[in-house]
Amino acid sequence: MKSCLLLTILLTSLVAICVGFQKVVSANDMENPKVIKAISPPFIPYVFDKTGYETVSVEVQIDSAGNVSSAKTVEFTLFKDRSIEETAMKWKFDTGEEGRVRKAVLKFAFRIMPENTSIDELGTTFTFPYEIELRRTVIKSKMIEDPFPK
Image (cartoon, rainbow, N blue to C red):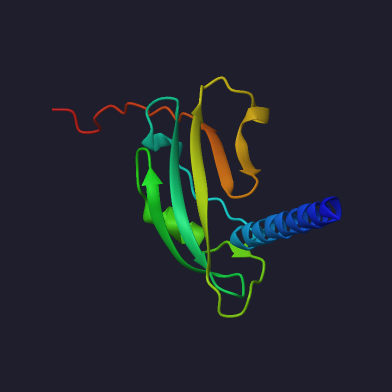
């Protein structure tokens, strides 16, 4: 009798743990809205004078229709540019529960590659769930002689 009672308690506890785990997984799914459309920001490599890697993270609020209702830069390594927030406003997510605002942090990475980098290594990469990396080569500035010499 005691072993049956102990087994019942053990099974009930196991079911409660599994149900609790399922709720946590479901809650996490709700906090990670799926991207429907991702837009990459403009990237002009001549603002950098060398190779390197810079990032900008933007926190977005997403309405129940999946539209971004606000975007705010929350972290950056070198520069903060309003155009990145404007780009984040153009993202589209799956629909959510009516009246519920969801959040996500989008990470935009800008990588300047060496001048001799293969074309296959350049471009834009989208990484699940919310990261975009833009790879470009350095644009060398040209010295122009003074058109009005003294």
